[in-house]
Image (cartoon, rainbow, N blue to C red; front, top):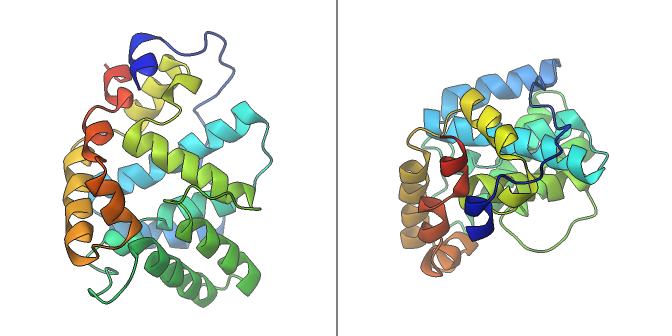
Length: 214
């Protein structure tokens, strides 16, 4: 975090931020669902997570399914919304969100193996364990960058500025902190609760993305 705040990141870029979301019927349907379910700060987080994942794929030479990564990013926090939030008996919002994504995607016409791959990526996005699926690793990297600034030093500051200009971070830290406090209260043994107690608020409130955007 400190290194990212004190440097401009890599000098050579070649990382183009003008990528457009996949233009498929499934991607459009999921975007419609996301737009109608998320608050503006959480929707922006999901869209930035997708674009960070795309940029890390380009930087690291990872081949991934663009549609699958996009849909996983759009749905990875779906269980934090009022529309899909589980009751207090659920063990983890990410696992519940994976179940929601699996069911929703099949209902929208995706095959079961595709839906399962998306569900796996969502269930693991707060985890440190690796996955055989490249999209899961890219979702993890993108989400952690947007929340905590992880790997911000790996992207040029100009690239970060372009992403944050395209999808502003307005009110996101406050919105996400509220969601995590609620998760910690309702599911005290969940990964979200443990991360919150370990001090997630510090990197959330001092994310170098916010400095790079100015």
